[in-house]
Length: 317
Length: 297
Image 1 (cartoon, rainbow over the protein chains, first blue to last red):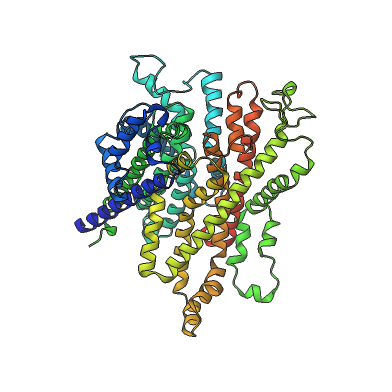
Image 2: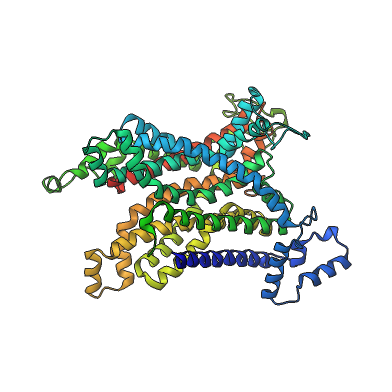
């Protein structure tokens, strides 16, 4: 077990390292002087520029440059050339917002998607099952930003039930947690929507497979009620496939955060990345890419560990 | 509906011998009402409009007419006009050609790479497999959207780059499916038999393995077109994809969102177009999946 975790850990580190190298190489391949990529020459005097080139060590060989850039990122000497803030701090400050929206979205998706999948699994071929698969195709076909535009139009502008954007009321210094929550409702719903069909489908398919297992027939044969069979005998056994879905969903959620946070003006990592890209603020874009990759690597690692907690049979001996 | 379609599979193969020309080929399945038929018809409709539409529409999609700004749907402008008085119908059609081309081209590249990587990894196994799967993992941990944002900010916006990036980030899913299928086939008797008679690996892959995975490839390719269109739309909506004046469904929605309150059709029409197109491909993909893997339903 220990050696297995260690191996996965090393693999993850290697992955993260390869990604950072790729990002670094991409920046090197870009047209123009890397120094002009990292700072905006318009804001810098030639002397400052020369100093920067020296401090970036642009005369150094690539590996040395790579280490310096990455080191600068983690120690905070790599700064946004717009706000002059350390890039890592900008990204770290944005993460709580992103996590809140992701967590809310996953929660909604789990609460709706899994029960839908359970009902569909027990009634294969029924009207409900067909309706659900139609609903899944519909849910997967709606662009999230269109859904967001419509929801904002209806619930924020027409009905005035929910705020349209931001993480808190504009200009407010103190506000209740219900207000804070109300700002999260629409972004979380938009985050959840495309994941509901994914979860429902995986739950349904996994349950249908389990339905054919001997232990389910045994449980039913000894007279247990349907709900006991479902909740006690079947659901625990579909947790493993469902966990693997989480591994698929998290990268999707992070990607979706770019659109959702921009649309709802939420100060999360996705919006930081988009705004930095539009301003050609390369240090910030680079940091968001690397940090979000690290997040995915870590979440994959956690998912792997969870497999072993949920299903002892998978534990390597 | 799909269940009636699958019953022929359940019947013993003797039935097939008694009636040599069974009507359960792909073509006949399209004639039965169901996902395959509706998805197929809708896809055909979308493709026809995109191909024939520009020859028929009376307006130039780029021609501005400031006197006709934000007109609602009428007999002259079937889908209304946008902020610059451009005809929405013409724009939805020409934007659709751009979005569909990006979706198709990136799907083709992604499928080609996915089939090659997955096929080789699954067939040869061992070190080759381990190496290729590490590569797949590397692409999979890359948060696609952030990579796209990074690349666009470094290399600038261009349609070619968009197609390349979408395909480069979307091939791993197909590669994994392909690998799984090929690994299963690798141990089948007919493959072993072919190998034992001295047939070359390339020939075994092309003649014995590939025909058996065509279904899986077609299914994943179909769904891929839809999701690629969504990716393009998202990027263009964020102003990181297709650049105006070239219209794509994504940047049309972005254009219209500022006047969404007063003129919903400027956003609504391209949005409906995206939805119908992606829906068509998803439905078709589901239908094809039922046809190729009847047991999975």
